[in-house]
Length: 345
Ligand code: SAM
Ligand code: FES
Image (cartoon, rainbow, N blue to C red):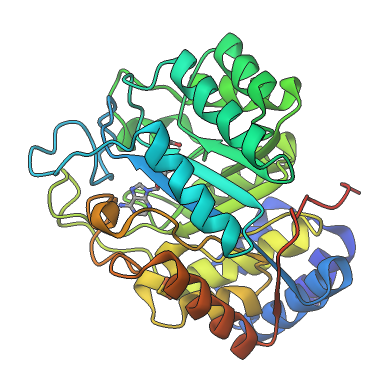
């Protein structure tokens, strides 16, 4: 019988039948984790990159069925950070050795292109040795180009699911997978380092959907791939759905590492939320990035995409120290440089 882990490691690919088998069985898990760790060490040694996450608004004009800050959630306590608030987060972060700032938020029209560019160029001017990442959703080519010219060189936009029918079960009609994909290719064409990804175990997701996600990622070849388990939020239409599992997410992280050896793969907050040592396990299965929270403590609980989100009560310095210990305990080392992606094969 052929060994699927060996084949995946050597070819960085498998046919759909073999991928389906690998995704649905746990018999290869230990071998997968080990192979993924070997490949991550070949490419990145024991380095773990840190990115300071600034959740700057929880207003959102979209109504994704899974998300706790969707516009129809009247129970959400909305907030916005000012340009000064954001610069203060960066100042704190810089003192804690962060060299990448990730500005993430709902799709909030209050932050028009002028304001985003003003914030980005402000950070760029004060911290020219830092990378600025945006994660602010779907925009036009022209808007993305303006942010890039202002100094943002990385962008995170998960495709969420690469299957049209599944996409329509997770989003209202006003949103489309085609536009999401258009955005991702625009970002790449402009020259951004691009991150994509999806939730593992989102409602209605099938193994075939997950295979479609892998095929889409092979087409896009993103620099970063962020996956985390889907987690319920009581104020969404999916309130009574099941959460994604630790097991499948870890299996998927390992498969991603073997298919995309060069990629930046975060051990996500959602992984740390479904299991107390989820992020450490993610690192051991091939992940090489962590994104501690730099948002002001007063607003953290309000950015509740899903229930029981971790790190909502800690100061930035506590989160930084906590993750440093966790990373070391898992057998890796936080590096504080800008942490660019390695060249694609
Ligand atoms: N508005 C930006 C966007 O659409 O890319 C960034 C913010 S959005 C809330 C960030 C990510 O959170 C989404 O891409 C989604 O995958 C994830 N997310 C939202 N709700 C979630 C849930 N219930 N469980 C796990 N992840 C969730
Ligand atoms: Fe935030 Fe542990 S990483 S408190």
